[in-house]
Amino acid sequence: MADPHPFDAAMALQPAGEHLFTGHGSPAYWNMIGPFGGITAAVLLQAVLDHPQRLGDPVALTVNYAGAVAPGPFTIEARPARTNRSSQHWIVQQWQTDAQGQRQLASTATVLTALRRDTWAASDAPMPAAPPPEGLPRALRPGDMVAWLQRYETRVITGEIPGMAQGGWDGRVGESSLTRWWLRDDPPRPPCFASLAALADVFFPRIWLKRALRVPVGTVSMTVYFLADAATLAACGTRHLLAEARGQGFHGGHFDQTGLLWSPDGTLLASTHQVVYYKE
Amino acid sequence: MADPHPFDAAMALQPAGEHLFTGHGSPAYWNMIGPFGGITAAVLLQAVLDHPQRLGDPVALTVNYAGAVAPGPFTIEARPARTNRSSQHWIVQQWQTDAQGQRQLASTATVLTALRRDTWAASDAPMPAAPPPEGLPRALRPGDMVAWLQRYETRVITGEIPGMAQGGWDGRVGESSLTRWWLRDDPPRPPCFASLAALADVFFPRIWLKRALRVPVGTVSMTVYFLADAATLAACGTRHLLAEARGQGFHGGHFDQTGLLWSPDGTLLASTHQVVYYKE
Image (cartoon, rainbow over all chains, first blue to last red):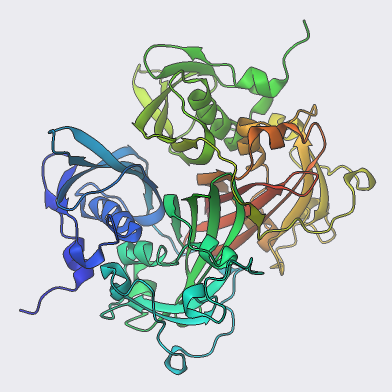
């Protein structure tokens, strides 16, 4: 049997009692001093997806990055806080046990799952025109030494990370914090709800683009709204998704980012928002 | 002594034990069958603001509307889940006791508070040009019989509720779900973090504008990112804020909304996002 995709390996959770799951930090998705935030978002959602009492599919996910995550095992509690006729609200918490045997909260999340029904549908966020990914060079990434960056293939349409672009890290204040790119897992993998949550967090920090300056940053809270069903995600196959993100306000040590992800056929799959701590 | 502003009266919570507060549904902010969602968001945040262990000011708030809220008393648990050096993550839950004496979860929230520091600042979401509020007629609202609509003064620049606009509820599919308006509390009141959370939820459902059809709806999750400090909020005084919101994807019984709120001087105060259930 072939090895599982690194993403699926990272999503492997073991039941550990009522509402409890244990997992293990994935070296394949490691960042410099902790896991890639997107893989944490994904695995918190995965605990809900694995829960035997789950009703429906994900509609909303909010993840709060509360503390550092160390390599090794972690525990997730995914508790259905309220179950309605066609929707369910979840409270999720992730812990690790430190060297002193103390339980440390690493992250929290809330999740809404719901039955999707056949309704009127529309989009007010059409996919922007973009050249096909095949004609675009694969983006080099300054963090090619960082494992998780190797798990994603990005082909940049606009808003490349300054280190790779003309001018580089010259500290100019750019006119726009918009990045738009084609994006998929590497190795290619059809998106699912959990992997879409991770894909929503692949954008490098908007402040790096806006300032062309690499200040210390960390996402503190991220929300993903899932706007398409599982069949639409699966139908993307291993083609690239189009994704874009931009910053809005940068003030007092935090900025926000808003983003969208479309299927290769132009269907809006998700909108995503996050607020990011920055220093200086 | 003059009566307090209805918003301040709605925010009045009583300490009720460790991490616990009791409050009472405000008739002044009542909707048809429950409280205005914005006042629920505000009072969940208020519990954090009132907590003696709070560190810093609000940066992010996510509220999940889990179940119906009945008139009368409620209990809020606001628990600091993790406290770091300069930030704090909160888990908040609101309950009511039903006629059978059972505790029913009404809503959940996560809140991030943090110390704001003097940093580089910028905006990638400039305030759009708009005629001054004084020259615009005060919007009539079809729900003038609904108490909470009387708590806000809106002066519409674009995207009036179809019932008030040419064409009315004609079931056409509009070209845009964007509403932009001047907005303030009524009676006027300088914004604070809690009232800003409520102001972020004043927009009528985007699907009503997009379809020009009044289908049943309910917000299920809302996020507010606070992008300015308390002094900037206070400096708005009782002038109107400029606010806009639009839908992005409408599919399978849920749509998302993204919005921004600016001070009258053009400072970005908050970005806000929500996902809304709809029927049909």
